Length: 322
Ligand code: SF4
Ligand code: MG
Image (cartoon, rainbow, N blue to C red; front, side, top):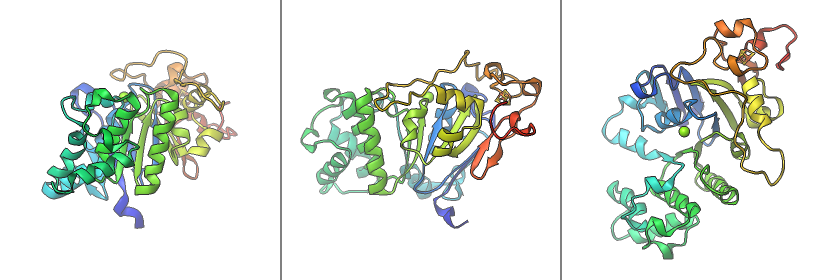
């Protein structure tokens, strides 16, 4: 494949680690350079765990993470450090990831200085540039994180990530803690940065509405398994999987959308003891006998569109629930 240089492949097996047993179960995900992939699911579905593994923060106990075609776990020294810098993570709560004792200029300037991406003489100018990119006024660089609003703190987190010149951002619920109007501003910033810096994104959210305008492709996870994967328009026009359909029903289709939390009927079962067969069967309105005993395979229902549902094996099903 020609785009192998920009390819990240996560082939992950379970169990991952003691505290996240079965958090992610045999996920095979490829993200191409320049692509924005939305990863959606309810809490406990394993999306954060997967994001951390893709970003190189959490090693998989089994399986491999390929960064530009090479196994991350086998990398050492310079190569490992470069991969670490190239993939940056943006978290939900910037306050907990920003050192409250450091000034913004120090927070943003620390890593690029350590890694030789700028010199001490150039540092002030370098920090100003990152702040401007993230929509912050460099005049405030001597302030501390608590002196900023939630949205501005998220911009500080983004400026800090940009300062190490990443190619790939893993955003884990990066706008979930913000007011709706601020959410839109931060999402617009991510899109502007994509164009300006040719960034690749894995955009993790519990909210299908948040990833809609941002993602080229959407991957839906349920209890550690990918249940559907398709181009964004396809997911919104003809979702195949009953779980995706119930998530879509919870997304308000109005212009000034309110904060939409996915509401699917029934409790989310424990990831430590997931239901047999199709994990979704206790909550699925279309479940039949086979669903309780047999794990559905993730199969292609149309070019580029995969779904994990036994309904697709029924004759004359046509990709919609019967
Ligand atoms: Fe529902 Fe069965 Fe499809 Fe699972 S496999 S989503 S339970 S119809
Ligand atoms: Mg999470």
